[in-house]
Length: 327
Image (tube, rainbow, N blue to C red; front, side, top):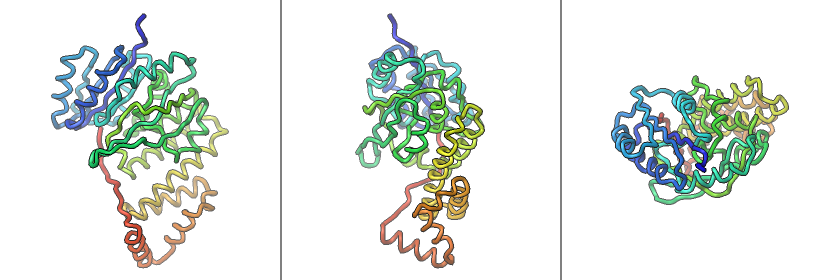
């Protein structure tokens, strides 16, 4: 009896240095009943040629060769609807799977009822500049876990690459195409209806390099803010979790705001977002780091500059965040 089909969706945009390894990590999986949908989102490098060569050799690969660079949310919605698998696994072209990823997760799903929608776990973070790797922190959310996802967000959230997800999760919760990408925020919506299964074993490798989308601090916060607003307006969102949502939103926003201020990435943006975080969840005013930051912001500008210079000199602090768009 043939096992259930799994759809792997690979997103690529100008990733000629990584795409071959990403594709091979899927075609060489120990689980063979795969459909591999590859979206090239308007690459200008050699990515399209490399993908075409793989597609010619493996009938499981379907190459969607787009000329225009559109939001990732648009591509994800399109390919999710076209998918034929019972489950969907995502992969960005600069990351890759370990060989037993799909089999391990399908085996788990076979022992679960249909109200379990996500099998997730940690991934390995590979630092390209040093060759070193480490297990990336992630939430251990398990079972009915919407409240836990809000309240333990800082433990590390769910990276979109490690999970295997029931196809219906994507069909019932299409990404908001007004956003470039929802990424991890989709899991809040999945958790309204579906249970999550946590597996401790890392099954994927996320490659850390200078152009990672995850380092786009301000862009990611803007996406997160829009996603939280959309979640509040979702008619299926349980009202008893609204306070948890507001608390999470405030904590996430204030953390990024303080980073923007101390790194001078965008001082005015950070100041405005810190005040907005307090408005969303007024009890955040009792947090020491917010009190200290607000006192700092009340000082004359020359004193603020002096304190920031002393802080950076004393701590050796250097921001690593950049602004970039990929995929």
